[in-house]
Image 1 (cartoon, rainbow, N blue to C red):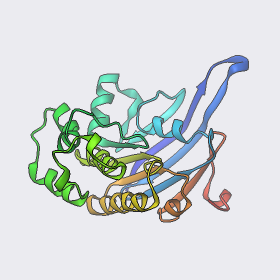
Image 2: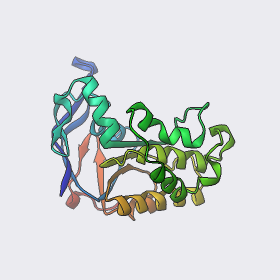
Image 3: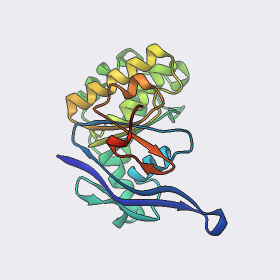
Image 4: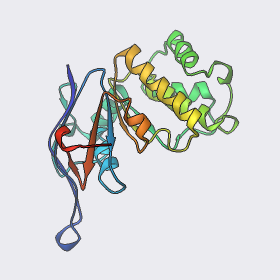
Length: 228
C-alpha cells in the first residue's frame, strides 16, 4: 500500500543568475512498511528532499502526498498538527530538551497534543530502546547512543505512519550505530511503519529494502543506479 508519493516536486532557491534548482521534478513513492535509503554526495539535495517530504519546507512546485493528504494544501497550523501525528523525525543532532528527563523528552509530542498518554506503550517503548533504567536521567547524563535512542523514542511515541531519519547515526560509533539501525528496523517491522533514511553508511544502505540515489537534485531511477 502506497503511503507517500511526490508529484513533480521542485525546490528552487534565488533567482536569475543566483538561481539554484535544489530539487528537480522528483517523482517518488514509498510503501507502507518499507525501508528506503536515500544516498548522494554532499549538496546533492538529500536534506532538502527530506525537509519537503516532512512538510518543514515549502516546495516551489509539485506535491507531497502522505496517506492521501496533500501536505501543501494545508495551512501552517494544520500542517504542524499533521506532522506531529503522522511523521516522526530523527536527526543527526538529538535536539533533546536539556531540562527534561529521558521519559519526559519521549512523551513531549503527546504533551504538545494534549493527548492522554498510554503509559503501557511508553514503558514498552522505553524497554525496546533499552532506556528503562535511564528514565529519570537528563540528556547531559546520557551517552550519545542513549540520547539518540531517546530521540527515536520521541519520534515513535505518536506511532507515526512515516519515520524520516537524516543521518541518525552520524555522530555515533560503529557499535552504537548498529544498535540504532537494529532498533529502527525492529520498529518498522513491529509497528508496520515506513522508514526513509538519508545515510552515507554503505552498510546501512545495503540493509534497506530499496536504495535511491539523488544527484544534483534529480532522483535517479533504479536502473540508473549501478552502485551505492
